Length: 235
Image (cartoon, rainbow, N blue to C red; front, top):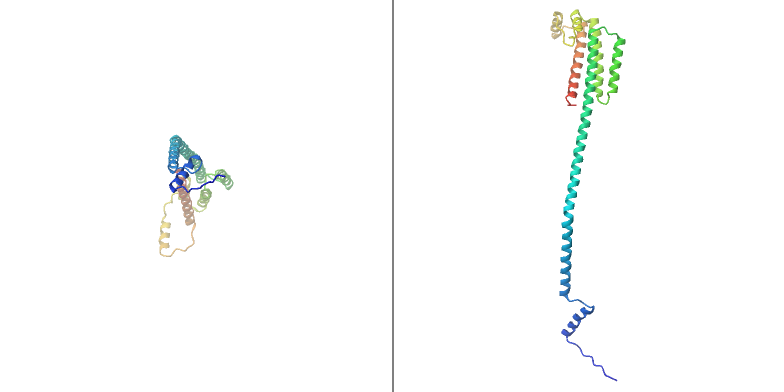
């Protein structure tokens, strides 16, 4: 029977043997691994660079297209909004102009003619009907002030007919009643007496007439100011 002899190999030989096993499925040589990794890194960088070179211009073009569309949409929206605002303001101006025309037509008719309460109510219904139909454009405060204006003018005419002197009544017929009537001697004496506390607080008929004229003047001036602001686009 043969005899087997086992001898220990030197450390260097063992290392060489271990390294040689890498070629047959064992461990790889570190230099081979480094070369392989370098090759993979180079390939990956080259592939990524191709993707960037191909995709970046397309991405930039896409972003440019999106930005152009977005800017165009914003501009279109602004133009539509401006157009709608312009149409609304045009219709609003027309409503205020029409209302003012109705108010002044009734004002002239009241001060130059004999308008009965029934006739006045008929005209007032016409104005209020227009105000209701134009509620989209007329502010509620302006609508209320317009109604108050014609009612005050009618009350002014009635007060002047009942208590006014001939001078004021004559000024009614020539449409200049909404200008303060000239002061008479009695009015000047009354003002002097009032300044020294002699005149009693009770108003006489002429003072009542002056007060209603002042009220009509004030409301008319306020309406003119409001309507002018609307027509100029301030409100």
